[in-house]
Length: 231
Image (tube, rainbow, N blue to C red; front, side, top):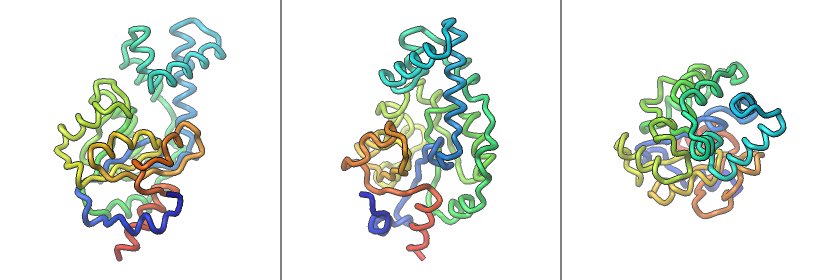
């Protein structure tokens, strides 16, 4: 599934009733490195909360991420942490490394179907990123980690909640993600799936499995290919 051309020919945007987009490293390119800032803020939060040096805080952060899907979930489960101050702290970052994208704005305007954001981040973070990109006008719903009752992807529960809240019909929906394993619950619900390639090992997990239907280099080039073939 590494050849973009035949895959995108199979995806007719006119048949898609709803597009479900991940936010970080999906709506904008991973090279913007926003998650580096978020990760550093997580480390600082853990250092302060547990009075740890940086190395031990980073080790705890990684361990919780590996065992719970997100560091926040691990802190909640194992340490009874209130997630809201954590979310506010770690998403207090500079979004200017994300370049405004008039091309993405134009492609989304051409793309038929409803468009929603489904993120393990927060609504305020998503709103800042979309404002920076210049694409907020295209999205009518943000399903964030708070709406998911702090249960992160790829747990199936927030996917079911997204469908219930938005009324999206999975059989006519397509989900776009940079983390391949996060596409499995979408596939299981009947959605089409698009994996955007990533250099990160943790994002590639499951990329060679059958639940990945389409593959793109990045969102702009993928949408451009789909829409240009449509004519």
